[in-house]
Image 1 (cartoon, rainbow, N blue to C red):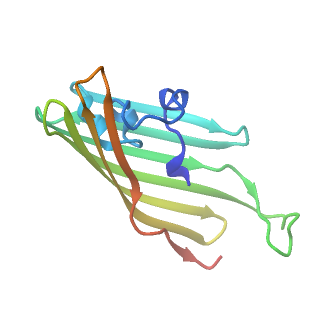
Image 2 (image 1 turned 60 degrees about the vertical axis):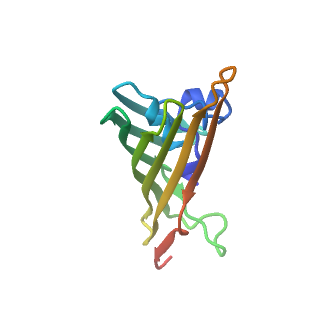
Length: 175
């Protein structure tokens, strides 16, 4: 779920339509090919408080142009749910216990300028979900693939992205 959260003010302002218009490291969650549009290097840092209930979403990323056509980036996303009350089917009003949910994703992105108008990119992600005070969690690998194509006609840019492709989260623990 947390990988689908909007990750930049510009993307939120555009209603999440950032696949073709994203530029640089802030566009990686929408389309990995977006880093092929940076000049030399780019950094992005963000902290968002969600829904006014203590949920915090943190992002840090850095991208760099390695050669005239090759780009690489690292990205770290972290979500902290804050303290939540534990409920069960037997105790729907609460057990008196509390827990926290931590979601974490680390990704590495590679993009390449194929031509002066076509960029391709791929992101490999390691995702982990941990519950504090409950012996449970999940982890998985995911892949994003994307492209950006400048048609050369009236400023029209086409973007394509397949996000979070991979196996389901593998849960572990007793809960």
